[in-house]
Image 1 (spheres, rainbow, N blue to C red):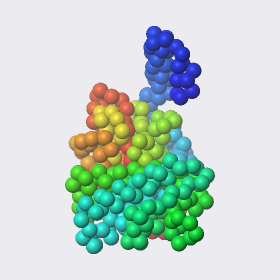
Image 2: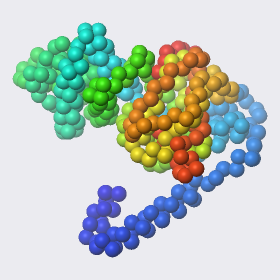
Image 3: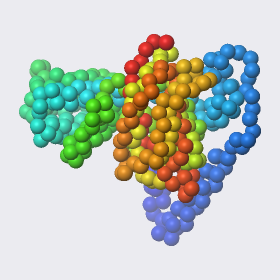
Image 4: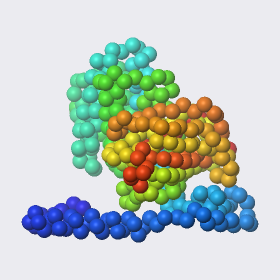
Length: 356
């Protein structure tokens, strides 16, 4: 898109308008051609031979198990850094709570941390380094969890070395580039909550520990290239999973990492950056212990309204089931009759994991 804009920079307004109209028509035609309506009246039996696990892994259980209706690949979530960042920030907030730190001081600390991370994000990719002023040095002295936060972003504090105290990359440059935007978004959300006097009840606070990570995801469909299913788990607010024809029904499956099972305690959903008519409204969350052959209902919600963009809602799970696969069946979007698309900004699962 940037290259296209540069190529068109010398054109007149009339020429630009004509090209934009052509682009829009092409996009609509491609969308219609790619996402053809599936005839759900056809029910195929799937492979009959082999174990359930073997057939489920190959999406060969038949259309009754909605896996075979997906045109998407199975994708792995690269989000261990998201859980580590949330754990570290949760520990910082717990420290403030345990010591009855005033809200004004908490806001001051997070504003300072945010400035540090923004400067690091803006610094040179290969030699990220920011000199610490007196305020930042004090934060690292009074907050034992601050260095834990840096470690989650692949950064290190150099407080007692020759020269000025600083924070620099620990050598994992790519990991730092992935993690810094996540930390910035999380700190921005914390600041927004404190400035707006929004405080969560226990078990619903953001951020919190025990976030599931590194699972595998499969969805009914996805919008390439920027609306893939794993975008809902990357910890970045501006990314999202978008289902081109999901307003009247779509699904997303999450397989727990490493053959483990989890006992889900709660989950968060966040609305995406735009188009509130595409928000989820009714859904069922299910769990399976046999790789998706049978399902138990864990939670169900209806008529949920997200009041703003990047609105996070937390939901406690009343029915505790051990599961190695979780599935959202989103039954309806906010304006499903007017808009065929569905989108969700982020999904976070929280619970205890166990070896199967």
